[in-house]
Length: 210
Image (cartoon, rainbow, N blue to C red; front, top):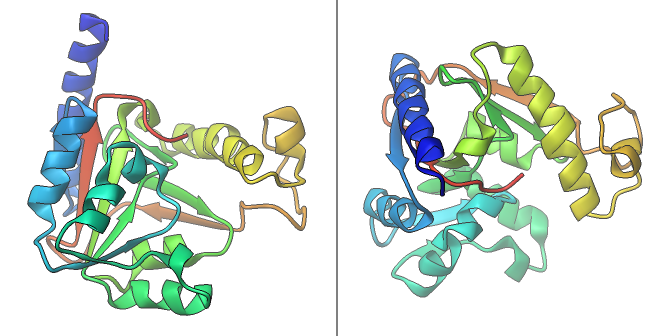
């Protein structure tokens, strides 16, 4: 990676981490996927019950494979015939893994969901929530820029990934649609945590997810 991009990511991550701290959340910076994986495994104690929504970033740094192979109770909803039952287990898990659809540079986290299992678990339930967030998802300080990224970058790509019949799948841009296939059903803005130590964000100096 270009050294100027590396330096920019480091400096921006410092600002985001200060913003997270002011919001009663914890932030760490990892320059690479390998460093991010090591930090995540340092945070999650062995023996913990761990689950997630559709977190591509956790897969990309190798965290999901490490949890499956290690001494953890990884609740993989893909292995459950009753998907709803697996999703409900998330609310009592020790750790819930997620990423962000976008973040402001002062620590506000934005997520969009289609079934609400991910955003509801972020908001309430699991003892800890661990976000894995590539620096490509960090936007300006205003919430509007983060919402625009979530709706016009993350949502269209995810709709295309799932093969959904939505306007954004065809055009690549949000139409604020009410399509039966829309994944923009619930919006969660996490601006503060009332529970110290519950929310941790690992910022990664590489592009992750969408």
